[in-house]
Image (tube, rainbow, N blue to C red):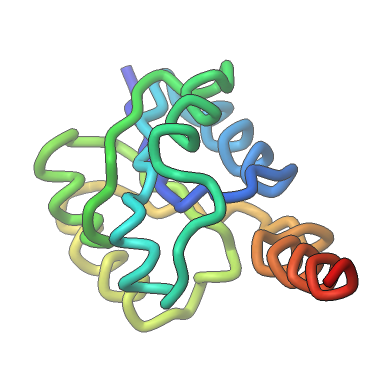
Length: 141
């Protein structure tokens, strides 16, 4: 059985999130998904998520490609490997060449775990949705 792992905030769930989960599951038998805690999102992005953790978990666990969920309290993918012993790590290709991900590649390679960079959906992003909601909110004031 091939175990895959991916993680994200999954705030304002959109087609890019669905594509990541679908494309990840197509490459493994079991997909474990880390959903970032509200605190982790705030600490890493400097903003609160629009959708609270419990609701984001319910959304992600309802997706047929997801087999297991855990709350991601930090960004450490090595700790996640130590806990779940996944065989493949999936992430959007917008992270390829990032120093942190280059380091993960080196470490995980020693464990026989490849990182698969999946195509980033350029047409939709949570950042764009958040900006659009802010503009609409400002117009209504």
